[in-house]
Image (tube, rainbow, N blue to C red; front, side, top):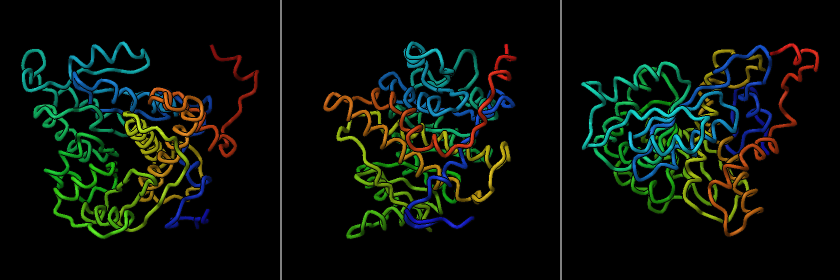
Length: 339
């Protein structure tokens, strides 16, 4: 694994020691929210599992609070999945485009954005024009607030139509799979024929003005147009739906931690440049998601579902980072004083 000099990233892979700096150490001095507050915007009446996977991955990695912003009917379903998620059924489809009275979804979402450290948009969003309109508004509003963004799944169609909403915003990560990547390049009139996957992804990142692109595939290619990381961590052989949502949840969590890192919320070596956080967050998330997939497939084989991958997220995290983290280990006397 290529070494990283302080403040400079390799074009191969970052060191685990560098990635670990983004992970908040757990201490008794922390408060609820210090380890990250994230939101997943998505979830229509047809796709309720996708935002659940995003938000649940964040909690399993150690984010403190995970909100889901979804369509009203989807909210009733998602609330039955887990009591740990904060479900906000603020989205409205074309047939019910307003909340009770004259309140709009945007008026409900705006105040919530002020509480967050990072936002994922698109998982399970569907194709309804009203849902896309609110998602587009949220992307613009999050950017105006300087919030890190993950754009995946159905939000990539919005990006294809309106690339200006994140063009030049280097605190954003887009995560297309192979078909989505091709459609996005076509929408942006970017000809990548004959290019390697690495070069094509780099061209897309350049076209978007330095946005970090995660081109998912046999190996995940991560690039901001300047540098390229390739994550070849072994994964499982199953390609069941939902694994991309788990990846989005991991990326949005590391981005949220990156915001806390920038603010000096905990002591660290200060070796990471702030502009490098999206690339490092994306690589760490790809590595963990692929390893969780490997563990799930090793356990379940052909019957592997994304719920099995989700169950392995914490084990994947421990396997990669447990020995590197310098978390405070409270004594029994200090812990017994907490009621």
